[in-house]
Length: 378
Ligand code: LMR
Image: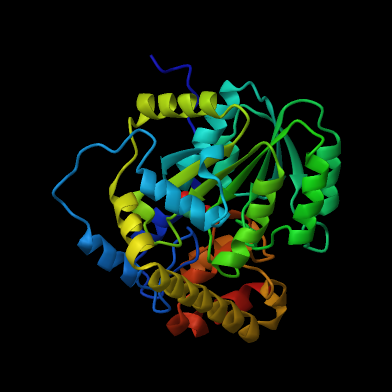
């Protein structure tokens, strides 16, 4: 019955995770999937989230509204867009994590007959699949010096004549390069986009983990306030360590709000019916009762990532190009053969193209990591 289907490749990040889990080497290191581990390599759940989870009532597991918990959406919008946001002017939808926010937006754009998109490579591996079916103009996210390639973005935007999605990453973090467009470059893009039939979609998965909550939101707020057609997908997997509880949101600013809302609700109802509640309930508790503690704990996570990045670069100065990257990721300039050697000889797991999760670095295995990397780059 399914003989016409093509057999597809497994997801590279989850496949690598399975290989890591099966590896018996006691020194193994997982620098793959974007999950924050402690400096000793332990799984980490923010203490504030653990406490808020204990306080969540288990007396009522009735369904949430199809759109999600209104308080969760209101508070999430406030964190992302700031206090001044008029929440009646856009559509809010709780999602099953950030991936689902991307997928919902992609489905909405398909229904809206937007057929084209601009996608800057490299990008998160899953973006390609989520936005498959769009006619993709692929540009290079970084220029030859490794800086954000504003000219590439500008040229692609200049050429737009038909409805087109422009995919951007929110904040200073970028997955996988760790380098994103600056505030000034975003302001330039805003000028260029204003006269074009472009719908900007911002994948915002690392709020707080770049330069801090307020700093990270600046460019997203500039795009949101100055463009007519813009959507933001938010994830709480990383900054609330809620990975498996799939907690996120999609916000869409458009003149066709009522229509868009009805379509999002229908897509939800016919797929997962209504969003999972546990993460939303935990976060409503965090937002209302433990907000400052949460921010402080996310700041500490970010500082730990910085510590690990600095330590790696100071021990291997030829990796100096990672110094000014932001967020969990940076890309080692190594070949696939070198990546394979790190896995085969040292049980160090790095995904394709050399992206490393800096928050996977164990300070107690730094000597081991340094020795391994030195052995392949010298
Ligand atoms: C990553 O890029 O590793 C994370 O965003 C996790 C994921 O879902 O791929």
